[in-house]
Image 1 (cartoon, one colour):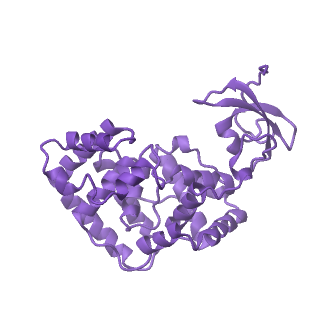
Image 2 (tube, rainbow, N blue to C red):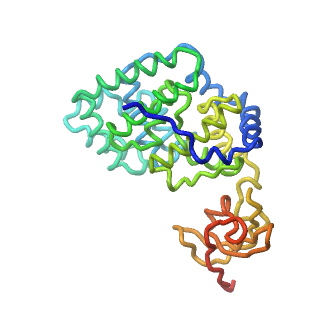
Image 3 (tube, rainbow, N blue to C red):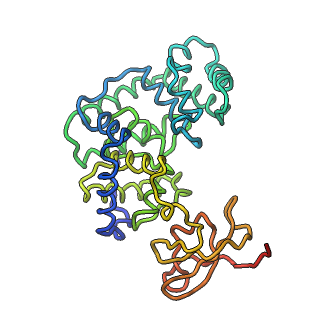
Length: 332
């Protein structure tokens, strides 16, 4: 059955300033190495050629970058940049236990988390690929390559989404994000993008729509948010893979202003007009969070919220936002 790309409810909230914000970001980032590399890999001809070694490298890279940083200089980044690649497919094929080989290699390198999990998932994927999976991979690659070989068309996202669904279903350790990261990293997709934390940060700081990153492990929530981003990009004349690169680089390089980042600073005003007053120093309801006192600039209502929620909070009284948390007073 073919995947349908629906128009999400998010679309109703798209504003002209969202289109302007996306165009403005691309203009700011147009000469950065990250965006130029993305255009060269995913937009400009020719389309990439298939190799099992390359596919395996990207697959392992997706597992390594799950739930840990891969920024320049980080352990994961250094591991992936090492030449030769220490978990190359040929090397894995030589070992009786791929799982033990991967685990030992990661541990010997040091400072990479989730070693046991990554080793187990890598070994399971190696097993699946060698039990008929390579044939499926090559078929999906060929279909995407044919589409990638021409000028981008918005209908391309349908096949791209189907390929992401395949990866999510057939590869161990892959969810909605990494199943899209896989094909984008290989240079084959332009519309289905991984919603990385840095990308959602930029969206939440700069666009009218707000993405709850905690819910993106649910496919329906992920695709509803991605549908909206694709619509905004279409109206802005920007490819989603370009926005992904620009927003990732902008946030990762620290080019966001303090006003964009420091939502817990007293005086911060979010896009809904909610003002940060102070940290009550009372533990919040989310992990490692405090309750902050917020005041609505429209009606003056005062309430509490987790620090992690400030950027998207709406007033419970006049904007139909969620009920606020109790405010208590803790002495310094």
